[in-house]
View 1 (cartoon, one colour):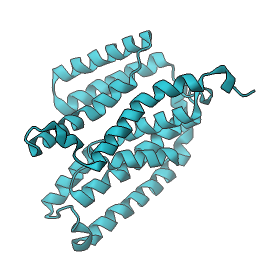
View 2 (cartoon, one colour):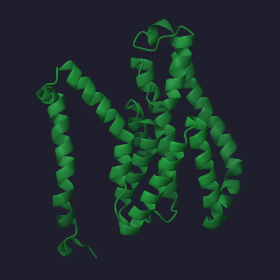
View 3 (cartoon, helix red, strand yellow):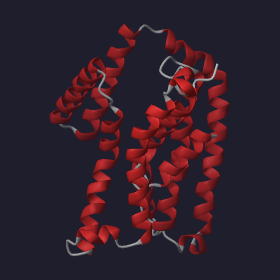
View 4 (spheres, helix red, strand yellow):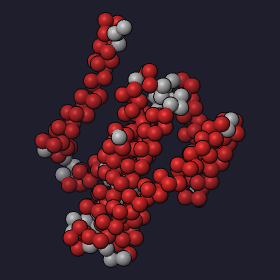
Length: 246
């Protein structure tokens, strides 16, 4: 349930998509479980959390698309383009002008989850057998599918080289114990941060104080600062020997 809530909130963020929802759901459950949770060893919670976050992010992505006309993911961007071709303009008036479209999309989510349940329950034993495949046989297949997927989307050899470079970089980071979480968050959110910063600078004619001009903005800056600084002070306190309970 926690992972579903986290995934839904991430899906509501415009442009975040299911990748961020799945990632944040996994990281939140991992932080709650702690070192004894066994995350990274194939525990059921570590598998269920990102899947729940991924599924709920799909529903959350519909919120900005239907209410504001801003796609929350690549899938909703395609759906938005389809609605526009049918002369249906998503936005606040959509709920009053075309309620059948809104409730039809909501009903489709319930139907899709029911169909997913009916299909997955009898096939779960088949899916589990994938875990018995040795990594030496599984990884080449995953790499091949990744290469084909990237090339089919862009048709660029540069993207293939870029994916290979990131794979090598990830392997080196894992060998040297470099955390990859900040890099993943930067890749997922960096483009949105740059776009919104440019938009804010255009609205303010290049005045950086515009970023601190409202109570909501100041509150978000304070929350971001505390989220960055608090772990530095809490980590030594939580690891003190006198806090260990037998």
